[in-house]
Length: 209
Image (cartoon, rainbow, N blue to C red; front, side):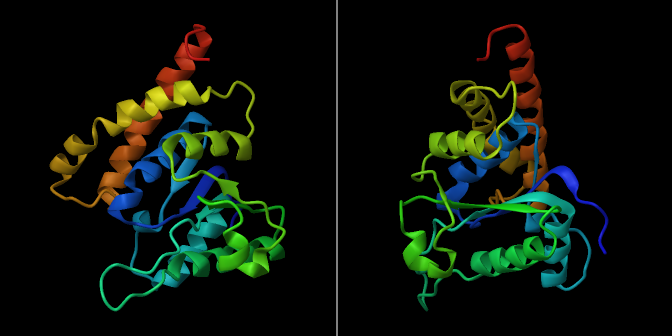
């Protein structure tokens, strides 16, 4: 049996593409704003078989978010749907069914009722609808992870803007254009964690409500 999961860890199952970057940043910033820590498969160290590493990461996290909003076919030929995210969701559901007290998963989408068509087996599961917007992601994170003293969406947007303004510097410093790479993900997390501290200080001073 794997060790007990980190109670503040959230596995992010999201598409890794340029068009999703603003929502990717919003997830990272929003989770830190709520006192949680995001994890990605791109940040997994070691050389074990990838699927085994993904399962181990899911097992180490108390929560997971599965964003199935990008169900379209790829633009580059051959046109192919994305199956990695549904596969990782299936792994997570199985783990949570076997150990319900160790893991809770959440489903995210951008369009109401589309999940009933794309994955009818999940009919009856309430998806968090972010409408493809940063504000939508932040708002739904607050709904999924209800916390006493949580910052407002407006305060979270201030933190998001601060982190987003540093993206060019992060990529330039890392010598890459890949915002999902392990090193850039780590830099994003450091910035988001710092922004969360500033938000909490503002809340204590009555400035970020």
